[in-house]
Length: 204
Image 1 (tube, rainbow, N blue to C red):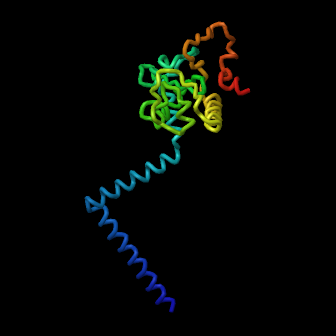
Image 2 (image 1 turned 180 degrees about the horizontal axis):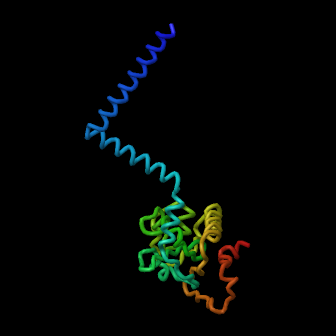
């Protein structure tokens, strides 16, 4: 009985070896199969590499490659803001929300050229954020948002808070005829905190 089991085991091993040898020859002696194997190996390598590095590592390397821009501190009119869409030589991207201007250059993959919210760059994005629209705001005059409802204005203020927490505050978005602030006379500590928007003051 033991002899029979041994013979059957040996036969199974031989069959497995023969199968593996045939599969090996089929793969490595066929140019098409060899090419397919190379593609599979390459795809597996990419998947493993992406999981190991993660998207954050690639974003970090891109940020390290780009020189850090000096901090900007000034007020803007709508027309003055327009050139800061990331297409200029220094690549700086500014976005206005609720009367405040923010430097969103470090979020260029979202707001810079080719990004999903590139239409916000160099513009007042308040109305877009309130109405969930990505259509570029081409108005050349200050938009006081007076036609928006209470819920939409709450949304604008929420977005303003998020931008304040994540990005550098640059200055105010000037109304028609409003004079810019002289920030040279301010303390450095005050530069980091955006003032309360005029519309919010009225509501308080």
